[in-house]
Image 1 (tube, rainbow, N blue to C red):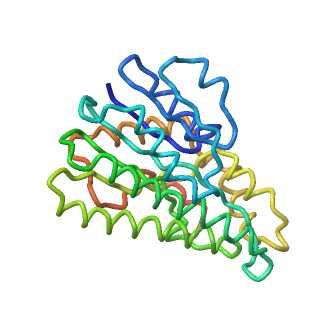
Image 2: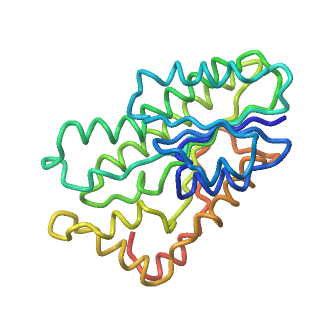
Length: 255
């Protein structure tokens, strides 16, 4: 049996990843603030946790509950996909509330850091396939006014993945880890970005152009790419990987 721990499965990429991983030989632990009843109805090999990753002090207990359900010594492979993300607050930093700032960094950066730490701790010493995918964003490199928190968190996630990769090179039973830029996807994050008031978020126009010129890929297509990457024999351990072809986007935008 292969086990998958996936965050942000209520919609978007996370939901599509989970749907495509459903199999008699797979067991899924899905985590999101709201329970995805449609996903749960597809297979009995799913345990669903309605959990807000903003509650970072409870993540250790959550991971303990998950690994109490897994006999790691008999598992074929265990995989963590840190997908949950939030773009808000989409605003200049001086207008963002402190609770909004904390919420963004908690979900986008601190939660995947703690989940990664707990994953490595619980699987340490076991000679099985162990991999972590941190779903990042090209916003770590391509910067826009009003997205300082999101970009900073994703850049931090990339550097964290690289550093943990170096650490795991010293382990006798290493965990593979990669940070992935999935590209421009038609998700609620995109809708939220392009619906903002241009007077407070000038980059909203860019997101409108991306939508209007047909540059967005579907969550299903992106999920398929991510899953294919997860199972690659030559897994690019410790790397930050861009799986989106930005050449077509650059025909319409200067980024």
